[in-house]
Structure formats: C-alpha cells, structure tokens
Amino acid sequence: MINKKKLNISNSNKIYKSAIKIIPSGGQTYSKGVTQFTEGFAPKYLDRGKGAYVTDVDGNTYLDYVMACQPLIFGYSDKDVNKAIVKQLSKGTSFSLQNKLEVDVSRLLIKNVPSAEMVRFGKNGADATSVAVKIARAYTKRDHIAYCGYHGWHDWYISKTDLNGGIPKFNQKLLHSFNYNDLGSLEKIFKKYKNKIAAVIMEPITVYTPNCYGPKNCKSKNCKIFCKKNFLKKVKDLAHKNNALLIFDEIVTGFRYSIGGAQELTNVTPDLTALAKAMSNGVPISAIVGKKKYMKSLEKTFFSFTYGGDCIGLAAAKASITKIKKLNVPDHINKVGLILKDGLNKIINTHELGKYFECIGYPCRSIFVFRGNGIFNELEMKTFLQQELFRRGILWAAYHSISYAHKKKEIKKTLKIFDQILKMFKNLFIEKKLRISSKLEGKVVKPVFRKVADFNSIINKTS
Ligand SMILES: Cc1ncc(COP(=O)(O)O)c(C=O)c1O
Image (cartoon, rainbow, N blue to C red; front, side, top):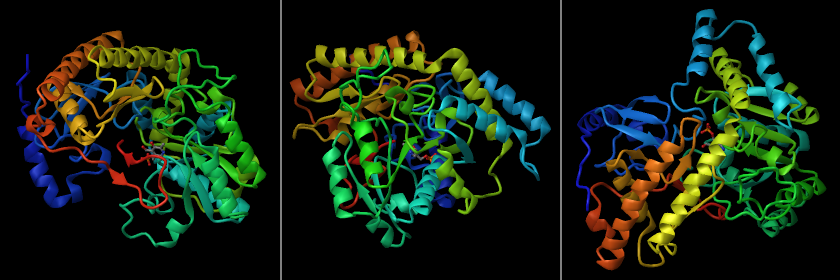
C-alpha cells in the first residue's frame, strides 16, 4: 500500500525563506543544503539530536544515516564527549599560551596511528589535507600533485571542479587525478610530469571502492571489500621511486574503519596522514600527522592561526579517541554496518532490482549506487528513495554513516522500510512503467559539484 503521509515542514520553509535573503544558498555546507535533500518535501533545518536520531524544527524525528556528514561516531550528544567539553568550558576555551591538551592528544594520535611521529592540529579536514600538500611541496620543492577522491574546499583542490570561481587558473594545471585500483592511471601522471610531482594524496579506501580483493595482510574480519591486491603498496612504491610523498586522507576512514585508520588495516603506512571527523565526534578539530622528517618542514612553513590548539576541540578529541578505543567502536559499526549492507543487497535481489541498485563500500560507511541503465535518471531514483525514506522517518543521502548508536534495532527497522520502498519502486516504475518524476513531491537532488577536465576518479561529490 502506498504511504501518502506528507511531512509538515512549515517551520523549515519559514526559516529558509528568511535565510535565503541573508545567507548565500541559505546555508553553510553544500552537502547539508537544499540541493541534497529533495526541496519541497524534505526538512531543511534540524533542531536537536540524540544518539542515532534527530528532530527537525517542526518536531519530526528521523533515524539519521548522514550523521552530520560522518563525524558522529558515537551519535549525537554523546554523554562522555559532552562531559569533557563542559569540564573544559569551565576552565577556558582558548588561551594566550599553549595548552597541555595539545601534547595529550598528540600522544594519543602517535600511539594509535601508524604514520604518526609528529602532530599538528587544524579545525577543518581541509586544513589537514591542505597543509599536507603544503608540506610535500615545501619538502620536495615541487608543485604538482596527483590525487584520487575528494580532499576539501581549498584552492589547490577545488580548482578542478565546476565550483572554481575566484581561483587562479594555474591551480588546475598543478593537479592530476588518477583512479582508485588503477595503477596505470598514476603511472601515466608520473611519466608526464617527471620530477614534478610533490605528492600523491588519496583516501586509502574510498566510499566507492567496489568488492573486496582482500590484501593478504588485511586484518579486518568483517570486511569483504577492499582495494585490489597490493594496490596501496604499489602506489607507495611508485610515489617513493619518483621521490614524491604519499599522503593518506583519512578524514573519514581514521578511527572509523579501524582505530589506526585504513593504514592500520592495510599495513601500508603513508608519509603524512590527514585526520578529522570521527576523532572528535563532531566537534571541530583536525590533525596532520606524519614522519618527523616531513613534519619538521612546518618549522619553516606557515601553518598558524588563532584557533589552532582550541581546547574544546582538543578536549572532545581526547574523550572521543579514548572512548573509541575503550568500546572498540570500529568493530561495532562494521558488524552492524555489514548487517545493513548485506540486508539491503538481499532486499534488492528479492525484488529483482540488482540491475538498478547495489549497496557497496566498507560496512561502516556503505553507499547505495544507482544504475539507470538508460531507463531511469539516477538522480530521480535517488530522490524517490530519499523522499519515501523521509516519509517513513529516515534521513538519508544514499550513504550509511553508521555510529555506535546505530544498533540492530535501527538496522532492522531500516531494512523493513527499504523492503516496502523497493517493492513499490518495482511496482510503479518497472511493472506499471510510470515515470519516476510523476511520483516525486519535491525537487530532484543534485550533485554538490562536477569535476572538470581530467577529473575522472569520482564523478560527483554527493556527500
Ligand atoms: C575524504 C575527505 N577529505 C577531506 C574532506 C574535507 O573535510 P572538511 O569538510 O572538514 O574540510 C572531506 C569532507 O567531507 C572528506 O570526506
């Protein structure tokens, strides 16, 4: 039976109407904006969250799979992280001299992340990836960068997308994309820009990494998906053969895939690592860690700002890392995430929709992929699923950022709802051959940006 419930989003719409007059695009983060959540049907503003659930400004509650763009590894408003923040608030937030917390959290990172010999802190993930690139350029005295995946908003990276207004063109010439699991695409870059590449920067395991080939030394018990045999090791060897640094962007994978990140899972240790998101359960802080000989470049390369070493972020990171370890959170989120991933694929197959949908990726952040097969528009497919999930109390943007607060109960509920929606998809659009657009009650979602020339590893940024 078709569920016709329409969400009340009147307060969301009211706030947005005034926001759009004073805030460009009406918000701060593209991935949280109206182009990503079917406008006209989905809520626009959240008010509060607890565990895996959020409540919008109209009082609707949802089970959340976006988790504030992935940092919330314990879920919203975690009591232990809150306690650490409140304690620090009473002592002070920023100081006129350095604070011991910087040393405490550095120690924790060095203890847990294989590549960490020295540490500096930033606020956003992009601070960490950008300073990593800066270190590599300073150390090698070269300008060009080979990259795979998304690495943040700074000029050196975003120049290669269609959101590149205000960025001097030369940046584009210095950035070259290669494809995950395709060593040849990286070899070509090293050949074309011989002695010019300062670093290779990549997510060691991307959200789009398809089914696992399982490196021999993979320590993960739950994972069936991985990089092609020895791909990362070969990338490292190739970078070093060409005197370039290897940078792992572990903004998402760090503390989530494993406490020591994907580098711990794969036994491939990069020269530098960018960390953020899960390390502080959503409180702004990031870190660049790496080998001493490279990190020491920061003694002569400027990376300094008023809120570097802000104590709220550091207190949250100290509490989060300690708790992630104590509870072995990666183990939980990978186990629960695998039940979700396997369950979704089973439902897809039960409804004979394998041609159109698949859930891929590492279990603790799997992603739904859409294949239109020339019949359907993939963004319309995503919009339809999102609309029906919202209607049934699930906040979803195609990926599943599992937290410690997502338990079997939440997964069971999610699978039941997906079963209803995919059954409906088959009935409406395959059996009855209706157009998806005829069943959409809001606008079709859009990609955040599109890549420009030579940008071929990930097609659209959707998260
Ligand atoms: C892999 C990766 N690197 C870098 C970033 C940039 O982090 P931030 O948005 O905190 O600057 C992101 C953000 O989503 C990311 O997913």
